[in-house]
Image (cartoon, rainbow, N blue to C red; front, top):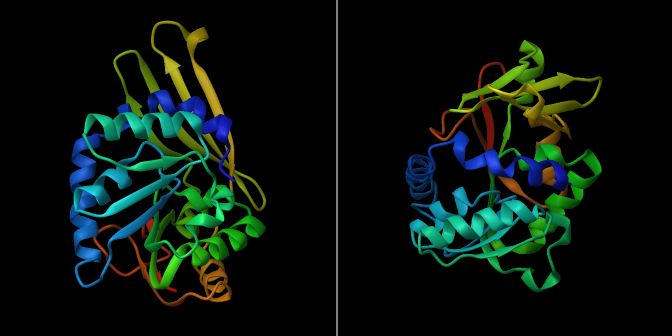
Length: 247
């Protein structure tokens, strides 16, 4: 499951690393394109984080329910929804902890922000089965993880750098045999001793493995894309692995 302590710790830095309003606009355009031909009214956002996707989905008129195991992320998501004067129900729940009352409640389940890379193979198997239970018959499942085929092949260590007024934020990978460690380092420009370092384990799931688990969980007709632009996924150079499949 998501490392709750890790995400609680980095939540104060979260919104400062992205242009929230600009990102919501891009996500709204993306979801409008994806759902243009679908009969989607209810959506679950798994690993909702600060609420970016939840707000984008609500912004195109959908009824959204957000789930995240991090107390601080849920607090931040509620704050962002409040600032936007948008009603969204948020629950502090990991995917495997979502109550049975939500069974067959959603037309679509989405998950962005590399959430599934926080799950080991056994938990990912359980998560896909749980998502199948959350969906109505014929429901859509849309999710994103990083393209670990490319990341491992090119040994991409540094994956993000943010220059803030008082600090530098560096996000980087450490490669192990079958796993990775994701590091989050905030270096205080004036006082090095005030700097912070957090890390969490990452499981680099790839397209072939993800595809097999989806079939086992009862999903079919999966389509694979490389970004929000919906170009065909290429394991050698795509930044992301986006998957759209159907129950």
